[in-house]
Length: 169
Image 1 (cartoon, rainbow, N blue to C red):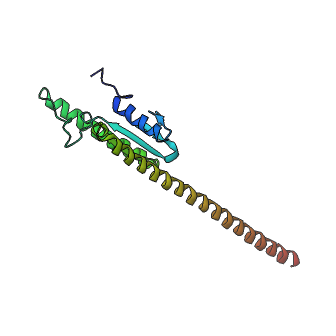
Image 2: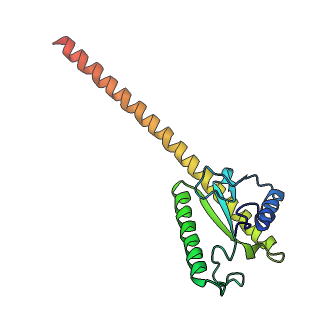
Image 3: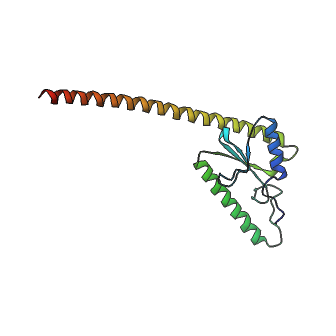
């Protein structure tokens, strides 16, 4: 198992090259984020995980079969991997990131084009949602500043009026 790669696998490289050709720019294995996502697209606030079908337990895939030797070990290992994956996804979503999971089998020669197009559309949609949220946040800040200025002006006028009354007594 020491020779099993955790980054720069063939499926990851295939996907990265395809995304690069489509004009997406990304960070690879960003350790500042939980789980060190395989591909991070900060502009679109999206992370992509490329999962091996065997190692992450892709149900219904022919590449996911528990070996006959030591099945308890392998079942336990894969269940732990799945639980860790879900924990990482929750952490990223709590930080405002959109998570996309791609399975190794989705990057086969006859499926890579469809998979890449699907990812590209999801990433673009996530980017639009992210920009919309930024715009809403900016508008909220502006309205809060205006409300604060109005409140301060009213308080200043009330204080001036109180001083005028107290000064005349």
